[in-house]
Length: 198
Image (cartoon, rainbow, N blue to C red; front, side):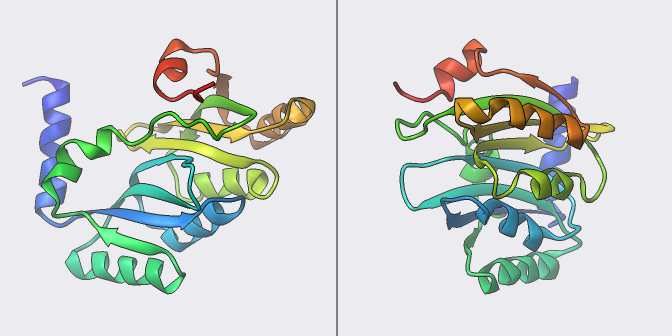
């Protein structure tokens, strides 16, 4: 038994006991939609969040959320739908649980001016909303991945569409937020698996 296997067992237990819900939610592809979606999550503990900008009008978000029981899972799905988001419950979908959750993303030809940063978010309620309240509406988020590993800080990978003339301002905003970050736009893993096809 190693740490990877222990993490797998924990994930399967949470899902099997109905304490983690997994959703595929479609949101409009554009500034502000991401923030509106996060607001609907409220103070629920997010266990996983995967998003990659698509070439269509809708973006699909793969999100895992800790829930008390199946009734709470259904209530959360209803909340998403009442906000106008098409949302499918994948909590009982074996393919989603075993494979898709680790493969969300891809490369796109339609993304311009993308820069990608890794962050350490404090593991506390409101950390993501603090980040989005400053970024939202200023620059489009083109990629987002977060997975809760039970540490003091959550590791986040995020892409933004920032024109070159606004990059200095963008860095100032990141410094104001106060989360540890680093530019990984030139990292080969990003370039070959998530970078724009140009």
